[in-house]
Image 1 (cartoon, rainbow, N blue to C red):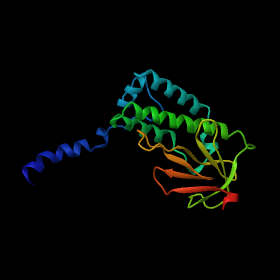
Image 2: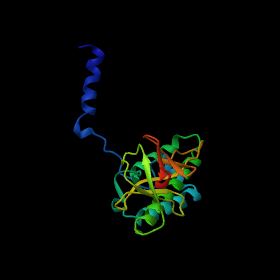
Image 3: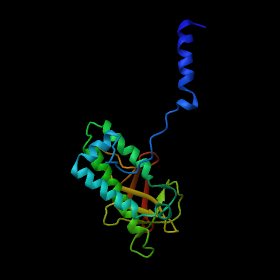
Image 4: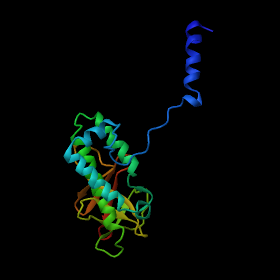
Amino acid sequence: MKPLLAAVLPAFLFCGAPGAAVPPPPEQFAANCESPTYASDMLVCGDTTLRALDARMRDAWRGLDFAAAVAPGAWVEGQQDWFKRRSMCAFSERHTECPQDAYLERIAVLEALRRVAPRPARQDTAAVCSVAPWGDAGVRLQIPSTGALAIEDGDARVIAAATPLRPGGAWTPYVGFRVEGASVRLAPINGPIVVCSPREQR
């Protein structure tokens, strides 16, 4: 065995031993201002505007039965997944604008889900979406006062939630949307472009 390898191998084996494993960081769904460990948390906790947005987001999350409102496999970002993406704002050159836009998107989506879920009978638009992962079955489109677009399946569960696209923004929404005439164009962060049109337009 080469001298260098012989010297490094014992240390490598020791570090890889089960007893030396480093535990993963605890799950977080919002900023921890009591003992912030993430750089993004330190930024949020030290900024009155961002801290207020974090509190508003917490309230929206607590008042939502996410599992009941959202269909399995829906284009709706999970809370912890969103938080992990928000934490990456610490590496953005626009590190103040990025978390602010992230919070505004999340609040719009969560508040839209809260408004949509308890109202099975409401004004909305019947539509069909092309090249959609949920198929070509009819869906319902609605844009609550939060500004987020909610798309529901036949069981009144949300299969997609989107916020308006902002080209050049500091934050990329999980699903963005743009109105194109009578249709709505959905642009997910990972996935195909989907166009939803009112039934009478198809």
